[in-house]
Image (cartoon, rainbow, N blue to C red):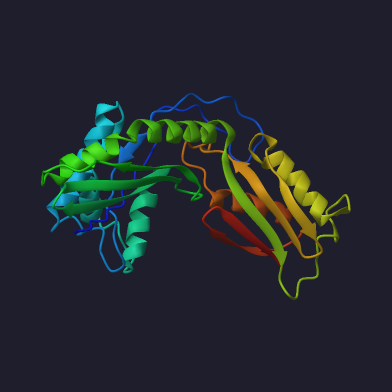
Length: 297
């Protein structure tokens, strides 16, 4: 039995979309979008995304076959190898860490979503088969959009590409329908973030400190700001204590209206910092996946 693991990133960028307003509560309904897809190979620890396909013809075939499956369903696709070569020739990669290089490539693609797919090739005397697991993630937040498991069934063939195509074909339509619906929901209603406000050990403030010109409690000021700046006023407070306030579902727009570029958690965190300065407060921020940590000094 021989196992072959492959994670595919399906990277989406938007071809047509009405502008969305960054850090505001306005904005109209958005058109259904046609995602652009790029297939990226999985790399184990120690493997380099820039070379992983060179010595494995089965991986190259599998990537091509799955790309063809999306082409046949009317999606626009990007050639991963060509895009990677262009990035290398332009000296895009600067980090020595291989994991950072992969992350750089995904982030710099300008995409919205990637899909991880694990492909296992099973060889036996009763025939060969391929099993795939596909999971879609929104890039800037890491939130899962869809996941499916497909199997080719056993066949007396060594054509791994054909088996991979058959395995993906058993789940492709359902997977794409769920992914498209979730993606459209994000376009219309925004991306979900978790925002946690805390305090440095030597901070003179807590959530019940009176701040600003109106002398409101800090917790009230934060909620009022979130109400005005969360996309379409969509936010939820998990809880508030003396030294902690957590918003567990704050929506931000997919696109920045002023530039048309992707709107990400870092930009929203910057707006929070600007607001804190209007209250005469300083802080620091940490961003991990879909969570923003704000520490007030």
